[in-house]
Image (tube, rainbow, N blue to C red; front, side, top):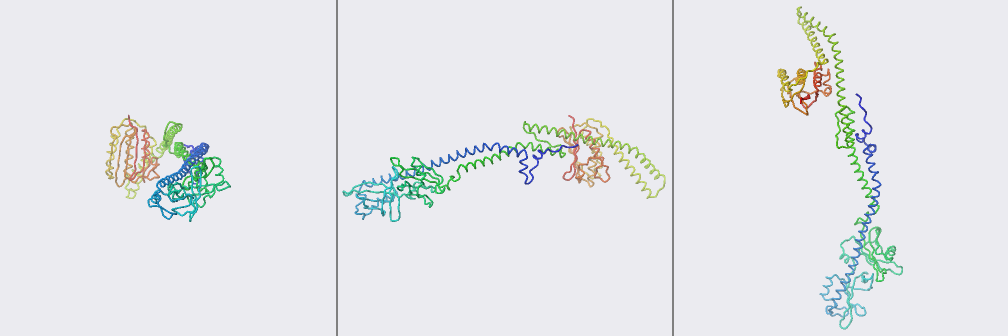
Length: 596
C-alpha cells in the first residue's frame, strides 16, 4: 500500500535546524513566521512607547536631579548665612563684657584662655579688634588687607589677603567701648574645604561662588570647594544672560566638559539685580547622569522591549506550534510505516479537533494495514492451497509407491548391511517429505474453527501435561503464574491446543541444554495475556521480524510452518501474537478477547 509523502510544512515543523542554515529554517517555518509577525506587530507600538518612556524618564530624572541640586545649593547658601548669624551672635555676647577682652595695648596682650576655648569650640578661625579708625588693634592671624564682598541681599563676605594667600571669610562685627574708646570685634570663619565638610560629607559635590568681575558684565570665580584644574574661572556668558533675565536657576549637564551636572542659583540684591552666583555641581561619574539621556534611555527601552518581544514571541509561537509539531512527527512516523503513532489531544480548539481527526485517521490506516496483511496472507494461503492440492496429487502417490517398494525390497531380500542402510535412508526421507507435505497442507488448508467457551487455565494445564515428559527429558523447569482462572475465552480447543503446543515445543528446542520456561496468564484491558518466556539464546535480529512467516526458521531441520500456523490460529480467534528478545531469552505473547 503506497503511503502519502510528507508535506514540506510538516518537515519544516518537525525537522530540527541543520547546521548553519537554522536562521533560514526558522524564517521558513511556521514558528519563525509567528515570531516575525509578533515582532512586526509590536515594533511600531514599541517605538512610540520607547520614545514616550524616554521623555518621561529623562524629564523625571532631570526634574528630581534639579530639585536635589537646588535644595543642596540653597542649603549651602543657608549654611553661609547661618554661619554669619552665628558669628554675629557670638561677637555680640563677647562684647557684652569688655572685661573678657582683657587689658591690651596695641595688641601686645593676647586673648584670654577662656575666649580662645570659646572660639575653638565654635569653629571660628579669626578674631580681630579694630579701633574707631579701623586700624587693627589685635588679630589672631596676620592679615594684610581686607575687602568686603556683598553677594545679594543676605550674603556678605570678607576677602582677606594673608601672607600666604587670598582667602574668603564669612564674618560678623559687633561694636563695644573700652576705656572710653570705641572698638569693633570681628569674628570670621574661612570659606574653605573645612567649612564645606561641615555642611556635607559627599565629596562628589562641588560648590562655587562667582562675583561680578568689572565693566564687561561678566562674573569671576572667588570660591570653589573642589580642586578641579579644568573648572571654569569665569562664568559662561550664556549662564549670565539667562540669570540676568530673571531666571530663578540655570541647569546644565555639561559643566567642565561633562565632568559635572550642576545648577546655577542667582544671588540678587533688594532691587533684583544679579550680585552673585552659586553653583552646585554633582560629579557625573558618580551618578547615572552620564547615560540617562533621551537617546540612551530610548535605545535601552527599545532594545530591551524588542528582546522581550522576541523572547515572548518565541515562547508563544513554540506553545502554539507544539501540537502542530507533534502532528507533523506523527505524520512522519505513519509515512515511515508506524501506524501506531498518535497525537496527544489537548484542549477543545481547532488544533485539538485536527489532532482527534488525525488519530481517527491513523486508527483507520492501522486497521487497513492489518486488513491488507490479512488479505495478503489469505492470498498466499489460497495460492498455497492450490499448490498443495497439486503437490498432494502429483507427489504423494509416487512417494507412497517409492516407500512401499523400498519396504518390500528390504523385507523380501537378504541385503547386506550397507544396502540395508541405504534402503532405510530412502524410507526415512520419503516419510519426512510426506510429513512436510502434510504440514504444508495443514497450513494451507486451514480448517474452520469451532468456537466454544473454554477455560484458558484448563487448556494450559492439558497442554503442559502432554509436554511434561519432553520437558523432563530436556531438563527444563516449568513455572506457571496463573491469574486468569476465572476468565473464559471463546475458541476452538483443538486449534488453541495446537497453537500453545507449538510455542512450548519451540521453547524446548531453543534450550537444548536445559533451562527455564515461565508461563504467565493475566487479564489486561479486556484481553487475556498469555506470555511464554524461555531462557534460551534468543532469535537472531534479522529473523525476529519475519519469524511468523511461512518457511522462515532458525532450526536446521525445521519447516518454518509451526509458528506461521500458530499465528493463523490466534488471528482466527480475533487475537494477536508478538515476539521479542529480552535479556536472557525470548518472550512470546498471545492476546485473546475474553468473554464478558
